[in-house]
Length: 488
Image 1 (spheres, rainbow, N blue to C red):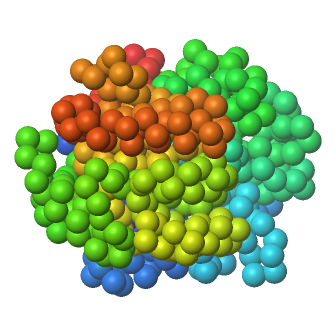
Image 2: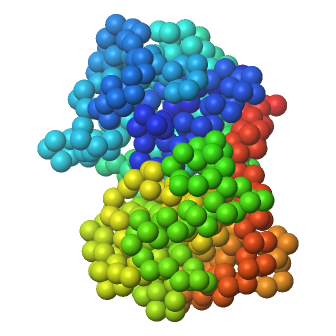
């Protein structure tokens, strides 16, 4: 099949999280399976900077073109590159007014949030780019709210164009809580007929909701884990769209994300002080000693090392972590924390690091190489998320034999099997259900107790490192979804 990916982020060129990781990895696996894959993304300032730093080739492929829709017009310049490490075509849509900003999702300089206008332009530019470049995709795979208009545009009559005559759409929800909501006045920028301003289209409680349109008009919907697909159909985690999703559940599939098994491989990782694999864990012990030295923490036999690597936002359960962490440290644990985000969380965690300076090190910011060293050197990873569509950190941790302590939500429940004392043959971590600091501490305490049982711990580590989180498995499921979209 000829599959077009349209996304606001593509790793490693421009990304803020899991969306970019998926779109940077899944096309590679689909191409290995024999599909023809093409990518479109905006040419942000950050993307220009990446190409300059990397030395990768990016060339203008079309003259600057006017993109016309409804009563709107804007210029687009199309550039061509390849997805790094592949020969997969990557087209970048340039427009300085929309994409030359301090951050990928920065509002306009005057503070106005023009997200609806920016990504309506991008979606229209994708369409025009396909027409000018004679790209006729069989599948348009749109990701998150930024490209949710593409299924709506296909529905609105775009299939009269030769490029899209046989095109079907797949829409992936990476995080339901970010929906592309705008004021009623912004509906005009979308460029759709007034019939799409309706409760069974883009109107949602008096506002325009781009994600709702993508959900309704896509031929198939996916999200990033089976459990999250179930959760978003409930009022508790449906973010106001649970009723829509329940009514369309016949076309909704949860497909667990994969990880790059080459980048995250303890046997070959260049960022870690020692390499190791499941049958020989000496390198993990060396990595732990090195990490403790780097963090300037006191080491003692049988003292577990907890880790937390995350954005510091409420979704990640930082409000659970902060009151529980002191109890863990007083109970005999060490901890290393790496993250950045909301100032109140940075301050609170830094204060804990100062108070327990011999047992806890807090690094504010993000450092990819340090993250690798933490996964390799830590014994346990704390991941008390309030909600987690898929989660990648627990997969990285499992790959490195670092046992996750997770709240059983979203993709965490799909990937972590909590040890309960009777399931040593299958368990690979520890879990809790209620979003309560006491329950987090109880799960962490269970991890600490079992860390002292060398035979059990080694068995759990072996289980963890045997898990298959390769993209090949996920790509096969996406291939089946594309076939369903095409009526197969």
